[in-house]
Length: 105
Image 1: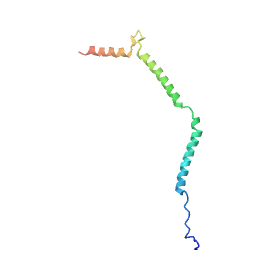
Image 2: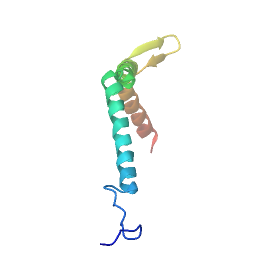
Image 3: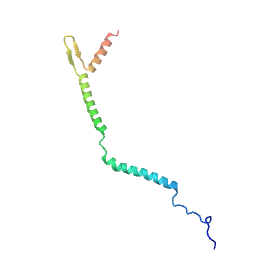
Image 4: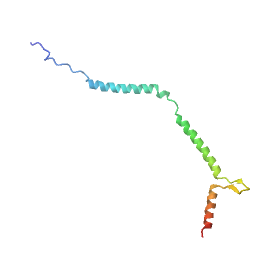
């Protein structure tokens, strides 16, 4: 029998290589971070501040449009002595077109 020497003994191959362990560690770190994020932040998430702002903007828009419509669609006397009247927009456009048509030969 021969005595085994250092040259005759083959080193045992590791079960996982260093590169594989690095990839597994990186993926594990990412998954651990995602889990901590989910555990700490997502259940305690505050209400969306823009949702209330959108409702407020819609309410302001509706009020503005109704105020504008009431100003555009009403007939009022601004100054009777000077003959200044506020005419509804649609009527004013029709009167202007008729005035221009009357001036053309």
